[in-house]
Structure formats: C-alpha cells, structure tokens
Amino acid sequence: MGNGEDLVTFAVFAYNQEKYIRAAVEGAFSQDYGNLEIILSDDFSSDLTFEIMKEMAANYNGSHKVILRQSSENLGLGLHVKEVSDLAQGEFIVVAAGDDVSLPHRTRAIIDVMKKDGTKFAASNYNRIDESGAVLDYNLKNDYSDNNLWALIDSDSSCFANGAAAAYDINFFRGALNSAIKTIKSGWLFNEDILFAAYAAAIDEKPSEYTGSSLLNYRVVSSSLSNFASRDNSYREEIRNLKREIFRFSTRLAVLDAIIELSDSYPSFASKLNMSVISTQRRLCEIELAASSDRFVDRFKNIFYAGNLDELRICLARVFGLKVLAALRFLSKKIKQI
Image 1 (tube, rainbow, N blue to C red):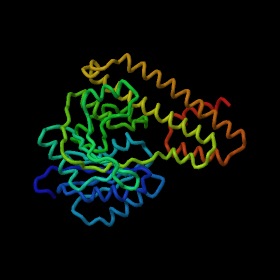
Image 2 (tube, rainbow, N blue to C red):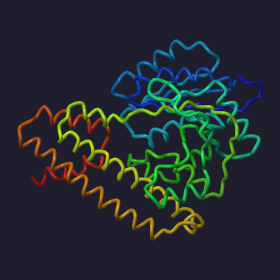
Image 3 (tube, rainbow, N blue to C red):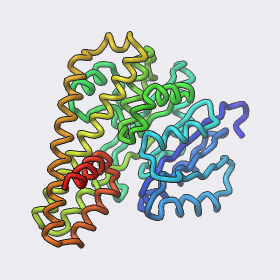
Image 4 (cartoon, helix red, strand yellow):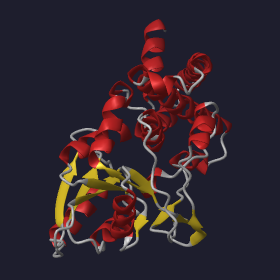
C-alpha cells in the first residue's frame, strides 16, 4: 500500500493482441505508484491474449492488487470500458491499451499533475513506436483544446488528443460513459477519447496541461484489414476498401450520436455547437453507410453465386472478426430479399 496515497485503478483493455499484451502487462506491473489496483481486462479475444494475461497474473508476486477479468462475449470498446469502470475501486483510473507500453512512473506522474491542478482528467505526452517497439516519434503532445474538439466534430478528421495516454477522476469517467450510454450500447463507439473530451466541454471541465516527458509508448499497428491483400485479387482489394468504408462511417456515426446524446442532457453544450450541421452530417453519414453496405453485400453475393465458397468463408471470417455490425445488419436484410 502507498502511505496514505489515494487508490488508483490501472486498467489494461485488451482484445486480440497476443503479440503485444505481454509488454502491456509488464508495463502495468512496473508502475512505481504504491496504492494501485491493476485490472487486466480482455474483451473475449479469439486468440491467446487472455491466456497470456492469466498466466502473467498467476505468476505476479509484486505489491499491486491484480484483478483478471474477461467479457462473456465480445462487447466492443465502449461497453468493455463501461464494465471495467463499474468494477474499478480507485479514486482515479489510468487507461492502457493492450498493445501500448506504460513507463514505470506513468501513474505517479499523471496523478500528481491532476491532484496539483485539481482537475478531473489529463493526458500525458507519449512516444510513437512501431510493431517491433522501435521509436518513431518522441514526446508527442496531446491537445484537448475546445478548438480542436469543435474542428473534429465539424469534420471527418481523425486528428485529436490521444486517449491512450489519459487518466481520469473515476466519477468523471463514469459520468462521461453514462452520458452517452445509448450510443455506447450500439457497439460502435471506438473513439472514447472524443466522448470524454466532449463531456468535459459539456460540464466546463478543463484538463491539466501536462508539460513533462512522455509516459507512454503508443504502438502504431497495421490494420488487420491489410492482411486481406496477401494475394493480388481485385475482389479482395474491393472488399477490403468496402470494410474500411463501413467501419469509418459507422464509427463516425457513433461519434455524432454521442455528441447529440450529450447535447440533449446539457443545453449549454448544445449552444456551443451548430446542431443543424451535425444533424445534416449524421444523415449524410447514414446514406454513405447504407450505400457501402449495399455494395458490400452485392460483392459477397457475386462470390457466392460463383461457387467460391472457400473465399466466401475467408471473407466472412475477416468481417465477423472485425465486428462489422452495420454490414451484418444490412446483410441479414438483403438475404431475406433474395
């Protein structure tokens, strides 16, 4: 225990990251903050991620309390985070992805900044590393400014603060998740860092301005979608691009839904936004998603009618593994019409 220190939860969120999870867990175990509970949480991985976490938890003999859990089914990131937030006992929560590596002083440094400033959340600087662990960029700065948030909401940009390097007051953390629970239950909210930033803007909460050195090695991993191009077949490339479109429109739609849900609860937040523009963006996003899903289904029908069942099986396995929920919904409707 940590000599009167507040209890902090350090949560590692993992899904199908067997190649990197060991380094992520080692980073969690290495934390030099005294009063720490570590939650190792797996979202029903189909690979060996959970088995590795289980083995490491069983062999751990350090001073931190370690809690191992696994979802009973694959929930998607939003609901996975929500379940862990309900389990956490700490006054603060430090979040970590299953493919990133936290430096030993991460918890102590970020919590010290938050307590000194009296803030509800903060995000540290971070290094970018590649799949092998080699550093690509040093000491990148997070930007949680309102201007950056508004620019993100009003466009399809992906440029924003990196939530993988963040820590939160637990009540703030839970409040943000509960504020957009309908969107979270859709299974498509992968940009949880945007939700936390939007919630902070809604309640006029400013983050700490972190000025120290990097506390996290953030891993840039090639999308598993790229594995589709292992053979140079045009339909593989087409389906890969369609999946990317569906994922992009679905996650974008979830961000807009979360913003709309927040604005319903916080009128002062809505007054800062151009809600007519957001509503228009949402309608356009739905149209684009429907069109991409239709093309996706038509492509699979062509494979099926051509009798190439082995290729169909491979493609469907890829899609299901990526949890492309919108595509499956459209697929079920189309099958009924055949």
